Every structure is written in C-alpha cells, then in structure tokens.
Length: 76
Image (cartoon, rainbow, N blue to C red; front, top):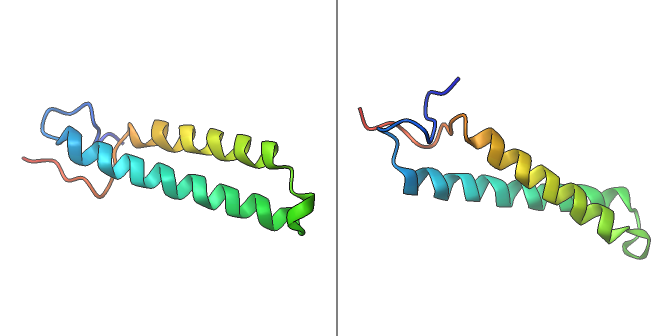
C-alpha cells in the first residue's frame, strides 16, 4: 500500500510533489470537463458546483497520492 509513499526516506520528495501535482491538475481538468458535459449547454452549467466538485476531487487526489505514486520509484 505504501510502496512509493512520500513518508518513506528513500523516496525523493521533489519528484513525488511534482508527480502529485500533475495528477491533481489532471484530476481537476477531468472533473471540470465532466461537469461541462453534464451541463449540456454552456449557459446551463452551474460553474460554482462544477468547480466545487473539481476542488474536492483535487484534494482527494492529493490525499490518495500520500499512499504512493507509481511514477516515483524509491531509491533503494
């Protein structure tokens, strides 16, 4: 579960942070895109709700990344 966790000494924190931020930004974009698709017309989109859901998804993505990110290998 914690294979490449940021809490391990042999995991580079800078590499982990970069990978976690990239994942979070992708999650944010995917959530916004999904909200726009659900809103059918751009005028009907509830932007506050879309960005609220995207923000929560981004926070969850960062929290999930604490457990480890496959892109960041430990330096053992």
